[in-house]
Image (cartoon, rainbow, N blue to C red):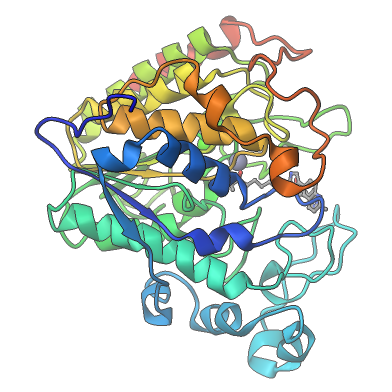
Length: 406
Ligand code: VJV
Ligand code: CA
Ligand code: ZN
């Protein structure tokens, strides 16, 4: 209907399972899996399924998840639910994994930084195991399409959970599907480049590969004080001086681009294209993984950038144009209607289709009608730009590009 065609000369696969949509992290928790329902409706409404091979994801196995994660943590994640949490916590092999106490946190944390308190970043919720192993299964299926040369670009918008550590959940992330994917890619690709445009630092992925010169991690993120409370923007890491583990062969195979709030399209394009371009030139990756967190968009509930969907999409096009095997993953994104519009637009870019400007407005169900309740995010379809109090000055950014050649 919208003239959707298959891309010429290459193949795209799309990996998803609708079961992830029914999950709830908690009533007012910012992470809302139903943003994936909106994305799916928009992608299908535009007819983009005709431009790619679509796969229904199956759950990852515990063995697959153990390729990176601690075996006790994997067992805990596979068994935990709000009903079993307390009992599992008492079992000695799990109790020994009590998290470090974070002084800022009022909620009680259990082993592995998990909690049943509704105010926690990583709550234990109904159906959680199913959700975690499904988004991981989708990423691993997407990875397999690439490594077996069956696809040139593979997409999983339910993946991209970059904060999870080996034996600790963090920042809404439990299983690090990105690390598992890259570990699998290393069987066939000499070098993998990981690029992360989520507004948060991709700390879990960077940490996992900090000693690994075959994986280069590059994260663009908000960095610095959150507001006048003195707290740092989560997770508080990813300074310019953070370049991989010093004194190991992994040193200089991590790159971080810390950015002040309010960065706009022009400024982001300048940083992204000069730094990503130069990184690809120097590192010569055999494949690229792009975490497309949509919380870097203007108007995001948690983000503090001013990027429009067009520029966010240009970040995807830029790495796509390198012609390397490409894995596109989701991540953050807390203003659901904009997440759906960005990821649908990026699905179109991946398949070389152009969507008319007016389509998203017609097809995205109004979230409050969809959920049967108001969501309190203000006007329905505001301009994307949210100007921040601290406007970002060009002079704040230039030194990061200059530093590249050192
Ligand atoms: O800033 C933090 C950590 C705290 C401690 C825990 N409390 C809940 C919040 C402050 C210091 N966490 C961040 C985590 C952001 C994760 C981003 C994930 C991604 O996009 O990079 C990839 C998917 C944070 N920011 C905002 C909140 N947490 C937040 C959590 C809630 C909440 C409101 C805000 C949890 C529950 C509820 N409301 C009900
Ligand atoms: Ca990032
Ligand atoms: Zn984020």
